[in-house]
Image (cartoon, one colour):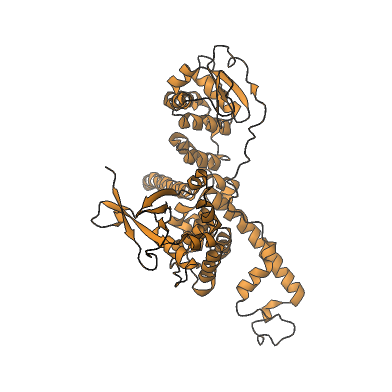
Length: 472
């Protein structure tokens, strides 16, 4: 049974009787409300004029020509309450309170924790509230800093997840004084994505090189800095005045030497052009009696039969039973469904369900792509069949050199058998960030921690097996 949702009014100063808009926060989960069986959302009664002056995004949302896709993109829904329009936002009560207090003529309410500050900065960035974003960033870096050495990695992971480039870069700098080990990061790894770990690993190496270059430039310009501390501050002509905060001054001076820090790095893919001319795959997927065409991401058409695909996959059956032809194909008799898999993967998938010779993958990437497609389209019997065919080839597919890559991809798509095989293959290698290297982009922090624990259990079992023999 679903929980009922009640609304609580925030109160002053967001309760004016002549307000013309309501912003509603996301509900507080019932699990956080002792003894309650309902979710509570908080309503802020505000003035449209103040909101649209502070945020170009809300100005677009509240315009008469606003399109529904913008609401969907921002996860916002609309409602009415007490004869007023309501915007139901995904942000929580405290985040909305801080945002509104920053643009209203009232006392600013600054977030007090790292997580709250990053959520608020993310919301300000999302709604393009530039003045509020500057206000929060200034407060959190100069007035009451929330970033410390102890929480630097956690701050980095959270900022990266929220797409906050400046905050992620600042936190990444703080992590330079920390050991980059799985043991040290510990439970904070659970919130780090693969691209976040990869970007930090690559940036860390480049950052140290930038610092080395910066030190060389300083020493070339002003001489040996080691005597600076023993000299009177600013009285020696040969030493620069480093100011009250030499650490930040130094980093500011070499910031242009750092590599471009992109929070979307490692997680972007070039979109496929939809205007490219497609071509037929050919026999046996070119029969005249085919009643469906599936098109690969590299624009190869496979003429197939709904009945066969429908038996093999519920997902396919639902897909091509949806009403109406696909966009751009209105004039054709045979329906076309565009898929994200490439032609090589689709060919192998189709040979596994058609009564023809099965095309067996010869590389790890091809095997994982095929298994992922089976999992995605819920082709359970086909998945079992393919695994059976691959069993004799597993040793050549899952090797120590590709084990981290295989483990990351298999974990992401919950291919449990392949996760186990890849994890076993990693036992021949050390487990650290430098060893994982480029493969870090495929391994989330949570899965990296699981692998570390698995290897620890394997080590324990191996020691237990050795001890009794040692006594004999």
